[in-house]
Image 1 (cartoon, helix red, strand yellow):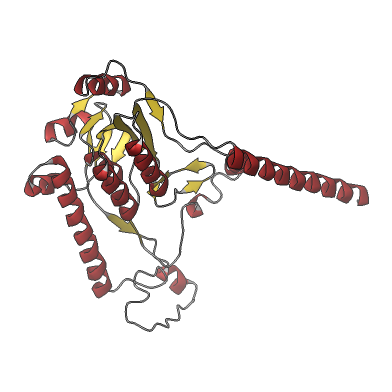
Image 2: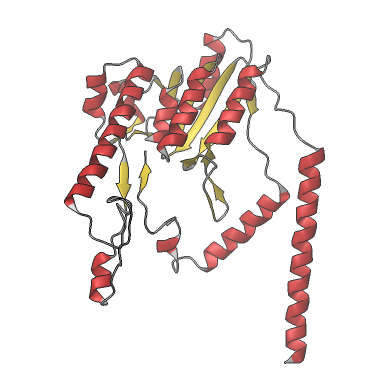
Length: 307
């Protein structure tokens, strides 16, 4: 037993030393070998995963950070060598604030902007695409889904079943509105629904403005339904069908360029991020299914609004 304990102590010590050395190397690389910017005449900015302000990350899978993407847009817009910006979108949406922040930054750009929707560019992802000058999608890309959702799991019935009580102490009638520990009263449901309706209406007006279409027309198709690229083209939600090569040829033709070279704007992963991703993925595979219900739960007493 003493030998086994000693062996485990040695392993743990080695792991700690390894992580410390990795962190130091990562810090040195990021401090002294910063990349000034990619080369090419068309900026390629990816918008991948869940859209949040800082970039949602779970088990090594990083989402789209509005902070990073806006920084890339501003850098590309200031670069004299960049003639256009192409957003490669593969996102189901995310936070309303983060989506609007990126869409607003796209509209502020002085360069011609394009969106290429890959597998999915829905909800907040489509919001961003709509802010560009031209949208390209595959005929089977998932687009649209112009709607807002807010949901949570209510535990009030479960508490009652096990004779547990939620002791409510608030200063302000609606301070715990949407708490999953109590039943949702009619007045609170009405308030929340009204707020979702307001956000949805703003979403509709933004899309109508961005696509230069009547608000009523956008309202008709803004049921939250998703559309394939071929359907979106008929509805006026996108401009053409195609892929990356299609986008390349379109940019070359519209901007009278002899050639198009993409400059990929993507934050390079540090050594620690790579290692964290590897370990996270492995731990996820080991525990897959055990904690799946808890993976994306952020707060037990809050409703998350997603576009």
